[in-house]
Image 1: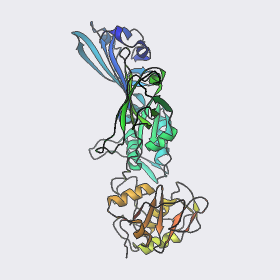
Image 2: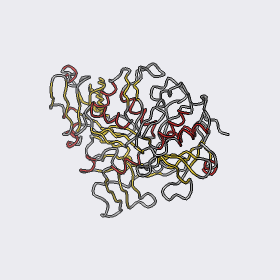
Image 3: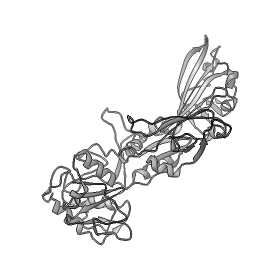
Image 4: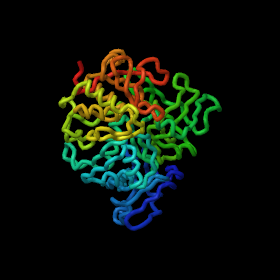
Length: 444
């Protein structure tokens, strides 16, 4: 492709900063290029520039450590290669998000105490110059960046953020200078919505250049996925994490989360926008809360471990510890030390975690994580059985309670009720979806 065939508006948004200062004389040398943004991959730009006399290489116009920015995307040059295009020497350049590259260089063992995963991600986003959009999450006693992982590769800050997102059932990605951290359904409530209507006549949305390509399959657990092709102002603004309301396409009319954006430099080529149904990933709790070396989940005082009953590791000891806290305040994200015999504030999952620790059993925090861990350990039970089992857990969306086995519960309800006994049945505001037994607790 000749340089003249490139979409000049796209090239005009490209700024290359080599090690010898700004350069503005390379546009006519560029023969191809594209920018790719995604919820699953790091933002990346690739381009090819003719270099017949190798002057670009000699002048170090493109050099590792330089920048190759596009519009609002700050990109650092990560790779430079010499090749040929139609028999002419050419330089191939790859540039990636400077923010993520900087996070990946932040290594070394370190522990942060008293932060939620969301607060940690927000802190690192600010540190590396990113805006932040994040769904709240419960505080943890500590968050650790490990000196090495199983492959002896030091963990970096980007690794930690992604690991925390996996544990919570969140997604995390950087797009257009913003770090996103949350469940897809939550991100939809914060997204900028773009409206596109397809029609075979002139009523189609301006900028929508072809019939949307959509797919739904029983073989996929990701819902509906598709691609729309657009040109115009929206094509330059839309980013992963935005939303699309699609109309005029029977069977596929719905609201979707933008999952990818591909911007080609070719003249008149449309921007390809990937969209998908916002489905939340399953939480993946820390590798094993049985592991006393897990840096994000330290053992409670007394050395109790999940799966190892302490002296009082019974359902009755578990229930008694929770009942003793009736009347305490509800504080979302509250943390209670296992060594504290009488904390004064809990949220729903912290009451469960703390009471289990007082019974000598280590358990994960977060109602979603607790349910997922019971599922992994094979201790999920029916709601009816849980209501009739003393010390069993009752799970609702975003909530957990401890069954007293007699049709009642002890739970940290909300700010109005605090920690209190409640009826397990007939409640309009809570619908139990599963029951569970705490792994490691002895049940009758």
